[in-house]
Length: 636
Image 1 (cartoon, rainbow, N blue to C red):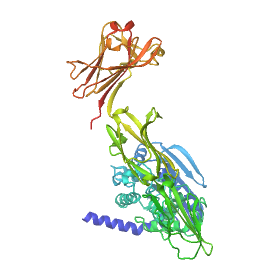
Image 2: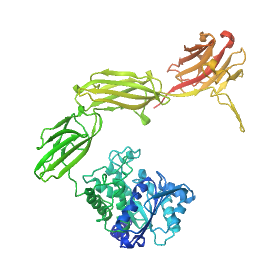
Image 3: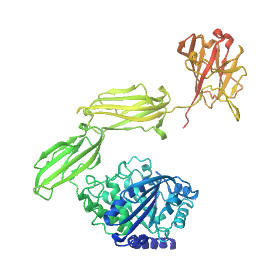
Image 4: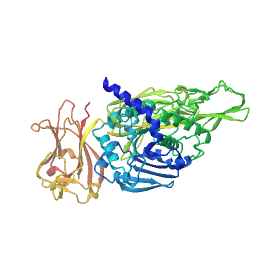
């Protein structure tokens, strides 16, 4: 109980002194015109985003001398920074900005960057994917070592070490770490806050926090919305990076930001955005660990709500303004849906009339003074949803697989539906095989994956609606019913370490020799093995619970069964002859390429498969083995 009370006191004291620390960080003057601002960031692409516009923002505030530095490695974690510092590794690209332009120097150490300037502020941060994982902050001696290393090697005694608190991903981010936070932006933001409060706030090495993540989260509650990234996690080049830069300046210096007017791009950061941005930044610096709702939340759409459309009909309803209306214009993807002087109460859009994917719905309301009030929302359209309940990790399936379809649009709105399986062969799409074709969306389809070779497949769903909207969607799965051992019959190689036998057979008789000559005669196969005499010779492969085998052989006559036997055994003592089929795959120059294929009854527990060649009985004594594959069922 005493520990918790002490921790609470530390947190409260930290929050009380945060603005004061920021206002006088590193001895920076309260008068921007008399100040010198020197900031070094140790981080990754998120610190690159945050620092991009800081020089111009500080210059706009009136600072006469600005020096910025970055020690940056994309995706770098605290643990990697720790390793690079501990071993003094030249792994960083060192970026520097003394005149508004960033320059770069590769292969620099952390020590080089720390001692290149008398920095006022030095920042570090955790990688975004782990920013909400408390344990990643407390890993062994990573953070204690880094903070001590920075303090021991900084060249300015009163330089402040600062924590950069990064942001949660955009709500629809595809970042592979987003599932760690339930693909929920608020869950990720709250996790970041918790991690910083538990691991950074009590740490006396840090002077204060730059709450970039909270500033962005505050702004997301405004009519600007969740539009601050370029790819779902990195900040947009102009708007998102500008918000972060203003947050850095205000958190580091405590200077007023009301008079800032410089923006990197007037189209992406128009004048009417500045009050929203400044409000969000000031609230974040004042209250870094909680979201302050924007006072600019105007929304004109009563319906639909932004995001995924769940119904076949989309009602479009506009809130009644508290002013006289001159004109209303509603558009979908820039194409007019309605223009007139009155608000419509019954405007609807059919979901089936829109192609699946993202669409923008916008409204512009002009009042009698000529002022226009507008809003644009993003809708995600789906015509159906496909679920595969049998899928496992890595999208792997086996046996009979069920494809469950749930329609979003009305059943009668489909004109045609086709479901196809397309194999992926060496990265290329092969010949499509039809699974279903009709005029209605099936509720459920069953696919016997045992009828197909193991491997990756695309499930292609091609639909056309009665509105002539066409859609072609792909879902990739992997059929894996069998484990396999594949022996390419490679000859041995010799090196300084001796001769390395590369054939995978666990046992073979002594009368074999490898053949690599004239591969053109053997349909391009340059790696083969053949009997060296007319004696019967054998090769044995081992695999637990073998269920199927395949051998590629090169012969002069097609009656392979007369001079090749396949034996199977559970213990290597008792052997049973296994029946097989022969399929001729190719013929040329007097040679035949044949595939031997056999099944092992499920009741037999087999681990050894032996191929026996009897060259004395073969036409022209000709038989060569080119390839062997054994299969065993994948176990649960």
